Image 1 (cartoon, rainbow, N blue to C red):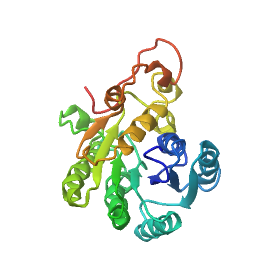
Image 2: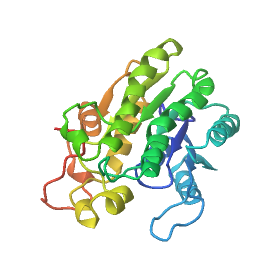
Image 3: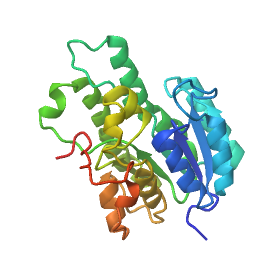
Length: 275
């Protein structure tokens, strides 16, 4: 039996991109997937809703619970955690995948955009983790996984988009803190970040457009890495800021060409915050 069989995984921002890929990877191992996202209706530009992903999860072999979720709304977050826990009889894993990005400096960044990044990135990790905690305490394979980078204090990562950087680093700092705080409950807490750019809607519409997508990898690499982390049984892997490629290499993966967004020899772009 897979270590993910009948485990319940609550994923924020799971209607598309990396969140959807993680949902499907876990579903293929027999997990129950809570698809938490705002996207309950089709978007004119972006594919996927919580309901289309729920159907994909079921087709992949998992059980699905789609929930309309805005990670900024405290009452809604707590209500969704309660619904998920009662529906599946518990929550084993929380994946803090929802994110907001705007690569702009302090001078021109609107305050409301800073507030959005803070709420969807750092604050949501705090809120969702706190809300999931009573359920995670009851699991013997509890894990919180947040999509945030290793801490790199080189000023170049702050110079042009310090607001975004600080919100993503705050997520990782919460990982480090919660790993120690929740160790007594045997809850593992880690962060995961891609070695290269990942071809998602955020890259296409917020960062560099379609031309950058060709120099990235598919979300599947993050999904496979996340699955390997979540499937660990002994809670010994905790308090780490992990990189997808390193995780998969440790798991024995040697072929990374399979993850290219577009086949070819065009050089891949390193993701932010990595040297």
